[in-house]
Length: 185
Image (tube, rainbow, N blue to C red; front, side, top):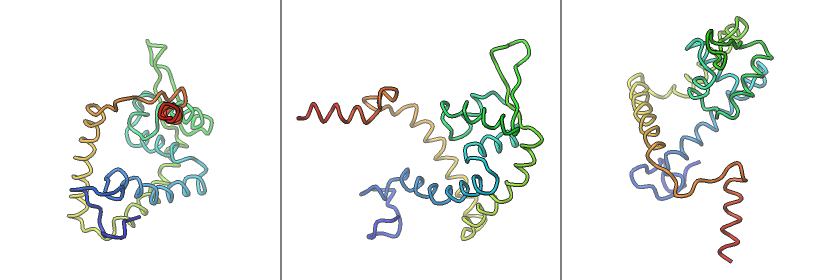
């Protein structure tokens, strides 16, 4: 949703939330991601998070649960639950690393590969529909820009730390907000 004053976000000099890159990307992902979610849940009976794990394993092969979680948008607390569900559905399997009983490796099953091969073309169709108004040169440039922004975001997460971390296990920002309201009065 754009601010009515300009057809494009003003990334050079943000004046409102509509000019902030993260907001624009989140809004885009909400729109296009909702289609993927509906396909996942409606057509094949898995969540978008489960799809991410299946797609990663189909492309990259076996890996540790923590490596898999770090390659997706799923936070580590959800990763274990997602993996258990995928194992129960027969889409992934888990086995111990020989010689190190503490470590495990996750792999995709034949059923998981079949699901990926059936579903991935639908995701590509959506991808192409979204990008249909961009030329091949623009698509290449967008890919380069997104890669540069991804690297910059990783660096920013390591260098930019909030003054006060929210204690998420103790109610997070809600508790902090209530505390501040109490102090301000």
